[in-house]
Length: 90
Image (tube, rainbow, N blue to C red; front, side, top):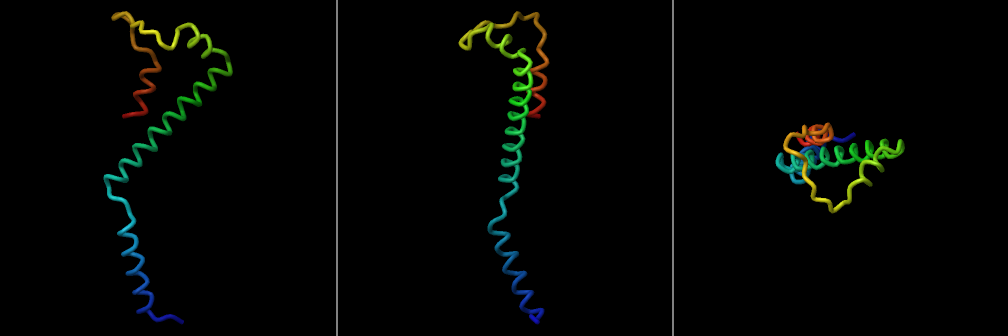
């Protein structure tokens, strides 16, 4: 059986290794932000695929060219999509 001293040395080694490889709080926050952004993007893709299976998206996007620069009238209210997309980045 191993002595307690041996376990203690192992613990010190593990803790030293952990402190060298563990990311800083700034790095952890950056990773969490990245993961949240990717999850939100995947949710939007999933929603888009759900809509496209019903045929709604093709009509919505095909009616306006991709390089169109038309702006909304100032009196127009923001769409629900704007609110949803802002929700992901809060």
